[in-house]
Image (cartoon, rainbow, N blue to C red; front, top):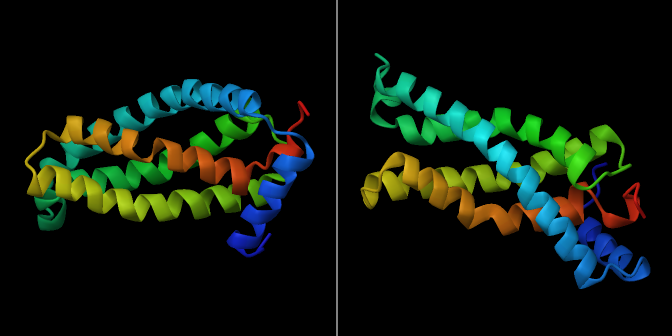
Length: 163
C-alpha cells in the first residue's frame, strides 16, 4: 500500500502493455470517467456553492476574506470520498482492495487539492473572475490529471473486473 508512487505508476504502465490497453480502451475509460465525473462535479459544485455562501456571511475573518479557497478545499475533501466510491464501482470497475485504492486516490487528489486551491485563489482574487466561473475553469484544468492519476495509481487497468 505504501509503494513508491513512481514505482507504482511504472508498474501500472507495464500492466497497460501486458493487458494490451489500447487507445480504444483508454478512450472508453476516459469517456466513462467524464460521464461519472460530471455527476461528481454536480455534487461537488452544490457543496462548494453552499459552503461559499455560508463562508461569505461568516463572522470569522479568514472565512469572510477567502470564502472561495476555503469552500473549494472543504468540498473537495468531501467530494473525494464520494468520487472514490463512484469511480471504483462504476467508472473503472476495479478489484483493487478498497483501502489501497482509497489511499492512492487520496494521494492523487491531495496533490491536486493543494495546487487547485492556489489556482482558485488566483482566479478569484488576482484575476477577479466570478467564483462560479472560477470553479468551472479550475475543474476543467485538472480533469486530465485526475484521470491519469486515478488510472495509473488508484485503479490500475490490470485489476479491472471487466478485463
